[in-house]
Amino acid sequence: MNEYLDHLSANDNDIYDLLISGKQRITVSVLRELLRDRGIFCSAKDEREDICDYISMIPHGFHDIEAIVEKREPPGRRDKTTNIQFDSEIALDDIKEAVESYMKTIGPNEEVKHRIGRDGGYVIKVEYDEFNHNRAKLLQRERNEAKIDFLVENGKTVVRLPATDKAKRVVEAIKECVEQRRKAPLAQEKVELAELSTPELRSKFFTSLISKLPGFKLRNVMNLKVSSLRRSEETDESLGIDLDTAESEARMEMFAVVHSMALSGQNLVQSKEYKELSQRGFYITHISWKSEQIENPPNIVQFEAGFEDKHNCLGFRYGVQGEFKYHKGSHRKGISPVDDKERAKYFSLIEQTALKLKNELLAETEG
Amino acid sequence: MRYKWLNVEWPLSIAQLAARMKSMEFNSTQQHGFVIDKIRDDTLEARYVERISYTDTIIDPFGNETSFDRMEYRHSAFRLTKAPPTLEFINSPRSLQAVLSRFSEISDFTVSIEELQVDVLVWAEELLKTVKGAGVLDSMQISRLELGNKVFAKILVSGEKDIKDACAQLIGDRKHTLEKIRVRLQSPLKGTIVLSNGGAATLSIEEVSEHVASLLRGSLNVALTKGKPILATTASH
Image (cartoon, rainbow over all chains, first blue to last red):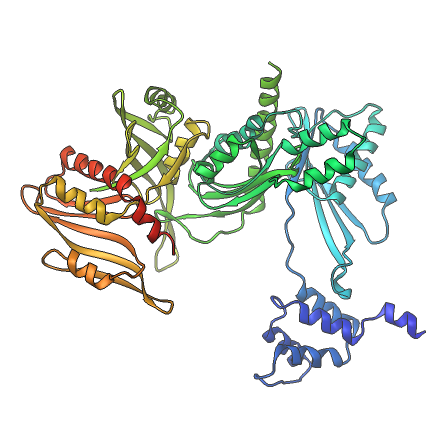
């Protein structure tokens, strides 16, 4: 019995780990508040560790622990966003059916809510658990939410989803289901640059994206990640020589090679360093930049965009980090979050521009 | 009158740049763009203009809101030359990011722009040479003057006469960064010029003419080529 109890309930050590590891959120004042709720006062001179130790020794009910875990968890972190575009309009009924059939396959810890969106699309919210065994025992189960938007417009269906594996699996399952109902495969279009073979064209995708975003003018580039194509050439060459792989591997390790680099600063695309890197065959794989809205209000919006797979430029994902509001002749210093309606507008701007640029660049390589 | 010089490496010729700026010309329908004033073989004078429209909201003591639609123009006048210093801003706005980003765009992100690092003492002395000594250094701003044992001082030295010798005595062989120097000119160019180590000059002269600007440019160029070994020591800490 005792063995099982250890798995089913939290012991004092687990509670101590939970409290002590969350230095930023479980501050001394939060700890004192926890004690005060129980009618216990502690000295202002007590160290954080001592209070944690004390709290972990007193009896806890399920809700007590749940309250601590809730305090400990950071408020909804935002994943980057990605999108898939289908070349035909999917009827909302089809999506609904597909979601309902997907709901039959899910486990007990997953919850799916779905409804017709306010402006004609379809919204699916998936809540699910993810396990992370690196964390303290009581924090290993993470509750995540994925909001998947289906936007049906102009003969196309755009699916906007968080750039997580789970969300991708859900969309894949729904897509299969819709295909079965329609009895025809859905042609999908993604922003991928694997076919662009030169670093110049790959960088051009990003530089055009930041300069041609409609309604915005570029102000600043703060972060850049660059990669070089050279690595792939080396592996391609070594594929042919099977006899002395060991030797060639050893030789490869001996040279100092830079595959990728991250730069941060101001106006990076104008820096000599960037110029030099691009001349040496590095291309941009991730960028974060600020642009000023041309129309009223002239707020500065901070964006980011990049590829998950740096090497092949697959898995385009992007985000809106926030905005600097214009107030009485100048921009505010602090960044503030963008509301959901604006965010959706900015996302569709990035999506459309990125897709257009991809097609233009592909046409350029073929032509 | 403020001047600011930057070092730009253009991959394009002046004529090509002018052509690309024309494609982004500012007019009544455009919210931002370039206005070209003068094109020569080796120089280009132009402005980058932005129209900023915003809504100002005022709340009166009774909580009623009144909003006004307002409009502003931001001007960045600049001068491009083949010879160094390659980019000059005249009375630039506080942030140059907007216009510098446009430069990147018209050059397909191949331009590199960097701030100058000038030894202001050399610059000021060269400037005095060109006006044939009709002026003195009357103020200096020094920062990070090492007093020893990781203690630093920020000093503003000013005087009625030339302060160079007094400053040299004060500094001795300590590490320091010379940030700004004020040059007081006597007639015919009556007034003061503040030179700063980022390659900027603020002029308070009755009559600012192209002649003064060219004197500043000339002495800046000499300082940039001459001042390098001294810069190495100031940059080392």
